[in-house]
Amino acid sequence: MTDQVAFDGVHKWYGDVPVVHDLTLGVGAGEFLTLLGPSGSGKTTTLRVLAGLEAVTSGEIRLAGRTITDEAPERRNIGLVFQNYALFPHMTVAQNVAFPLRARRAAGIGARVDRALEMTRLTALRERYPRQLSGGQQQRVALARAFVFDPAVLLMDEPLGALDRNLRDHMRLELKALQRRVGATVVYVTHDQEEALAMSDRVGVMHRGVLQQTASPEEIYERPVNSFVARFLGQSVCLPATRVERAEHTVLRVEGVTGPILVDRDNDTCEDLSGEFMIRPERLRIAGRRPAPSGVNAVRCVVEARVYLGARTEVRLRAEAGAPLQVTVPTGEGGALTEGSAHWLSWTPADGRFLTRVV
Ligand SMILES: Nc1ncnc2c1ncn2[C@@H]1O[C@H](COP(=O)(O)OP(=O)(O)OP(=O)(O)O)[C@@H](O)[C@H]1O
Ligand SMILES: [Mg+2]
Image 1 (cartoon, rainbow, N blue to C red):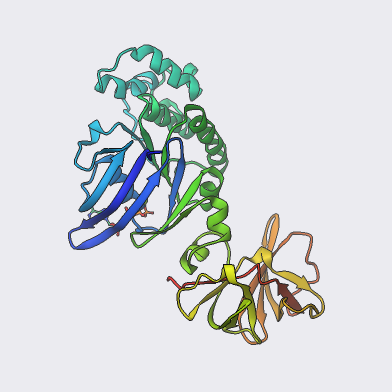
Image 2 (cartoon, rainbow, N blue to C red):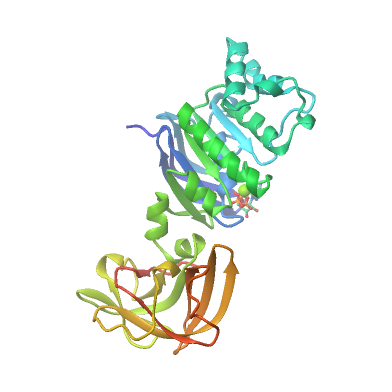
């Protein structure tokens, strides 16, 4: 099947500064793809070249198989929703939503606006002006205006960024439901990891203009391709490590940890001899005594601090040989993990990974 959106070896430079580097990425019809990454990693620029607001330096962009690299933005049939909504203040809700249809001299404007207003639950507010709306309502007008003309793709750049936490959670569900109903193809940008994991079919992590990995939320969280992705998404324990042996298991020497650490061969994706050992805090088990079975990794640690986070409590520990480790326990459990107390942490070779170091 042809991808709805395809980037093919796209580079974008601002002057002599590379901002997007060799981006090759396909987005399927009806797919919800989210780009995550630190500030300045090239997310907005990626959306802007797709929308045609910036020219690419080299490479090709296709929409449903058609090359659009040099096409004017208004001919690309792409809907945009940005953080500041950019509603027209002198137009009512209905006029704002009708605007893209009028600009395109579309047929049946009235019925299409009615439908868009209904889907975003704005029918009762159609005669209001933007200044008479709450933030969430303005957000819905921006959404209605973006998909009223049945765009081939919807691009959203932190569309919920200006909303408070509760409204954001609510709009997240609404937006996702709307996207499913209309079967829209969405390329979404957010700073909020939880939002990305909750809404997306696939998540892409960008770093310095390079797309590091694109995968389902579960895949990218459980099997990050390198230490940058592991650190960026969720909590992780990452420690410098060296591969000593690659036999039945990979055997690692981990900085600050006494004794060898075993990792499943499938979890060893490190391209070099030295890289980073990675484990998610929820994979570490707390044992009173040293765990007996062979093939289980065990490290003796002392609790340094507890951080209360409401439903969970984060416990920071220090291995005898110096490595910082961390476990997360449901609040109310882990009462024995008092500051200064010593414990064994254990995990199986399937729980840890050996990753290429990318910083
Ligand atoms: N018009 C421009 N001219 C020159 N440099 C630019 C221009 N627009 C963006 N940049 C630079 O390109 C890099 C990527 O910017 P971009 O806006 O794509 O980042 P981002 O990932 O969206 O970041 P944020 O999360 O802060 O929104 C930044 O270093 C930025 O300063
Ligand atoms: Mg941005």
